Image (cartoon, rainbow over all chains, first blue to last red; front, side, top):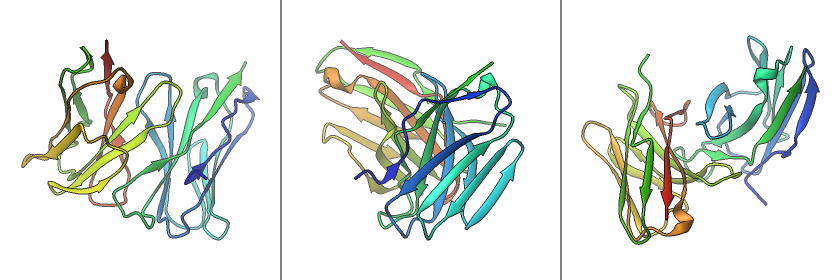
Length: 113
Length: 112
């Protein structure tokens, strides 16, 4: 079992819709959670960080964390074609230590006009 | 704002050669992570440094070594290169522990 699990997709949504991306993690003591966006051949770009249970909103993005369920999600409102990319969930601060950011396999999002 | 600088951006080496990748973190950031990403794969953690000391190690081959210098830049040394080492190599810069990591543009290594 991978430490961080994501559906590979592709997740296809129409322009203007809400895209919902999900991630589960196996290490219960994980402390910090991140969403990165990665375009093909480019480096991961940090979108959101979340450290405590609940919701965190930043512009069109909302991250949700539920530590009891070991689940973190990302909502993208008013999706745009430029949001089409791979979204990587990443987890740090687990039993492996605080200097080891572990990524999921990523979910490909396709926003069509 | 200053970003993470990686050099070179592209590198072509022959099998069994040696390569050195460099990473210059964001000013005042004291932690560096190194990752390898093959085509269609997620980034695989190689090694991390905090305050110039190795702090964690992932799936880094014995042929690879790395260090962080007094100015906090880091170098990844790769010897006896194999075709399978062809990948994108990213470093990430972090201030402290367990906080947001910012990635450099990456080095694309091609081994022929």
